[in-house]
Length: 296
Image (cartoon, rainbow, N blue to C red; front, side):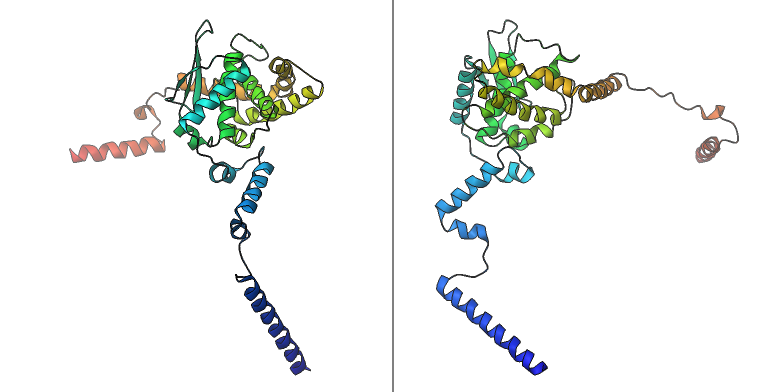
């Protein structure tokens, strides 16, 4: 009985080997291949597959998507063209562009609001994950939103700067849904890495309002809203009040840390001689002092 089973097993193995060799001869390539390698042999199919995967992850990115996928080369001319395009969207004059900045990007507006300078550092942007057209475009949208909201005061929270940042990120979310479908995944990933500070709220909250702004404008467009930016910002109070406790707790923590940095706790030196003789610290101190006197 065992000899019969052994014979059947050997026959099946022989048939399997024959099928593998036949397929290898027909296809003229290894049977077990990496799928990505197979697609590379057909540029159009491979490109289509990559575009499909990029489309699926356009609004949700992880560290691999940010730094190893969807990266694009952006020239100086591309940067200028993007800034001009975003300025046109806001119906603003093109700002004076400065490619030197101590942070990722910032905007400087004159007191009268008549002049605007846009600063950015491309190397810092790439290091943070802003390394393709969509993410760079959204970063510029955020900065120019501040110029658009220059005279606006929301008065929704005790730190107006935080609300201004949330408003700009809500506009980013809305912009991503207007016209072409601009990917927000990398932008939100970059935000999530940023801690709360005196001028900016927690990055997780900022990323959340990007998605909120995108959903809000989608509903508005179904209703036929015309004045896009002003209509979008009508939804800001609902978001702020819905996250008010989170904002307050975060702001209290940031303010407390700032106070500690400004007023460090001063500790007076310990007077070891005044400690009781039974104190172990005093005993160790006296032994150390005696040993130093003996050395002298």
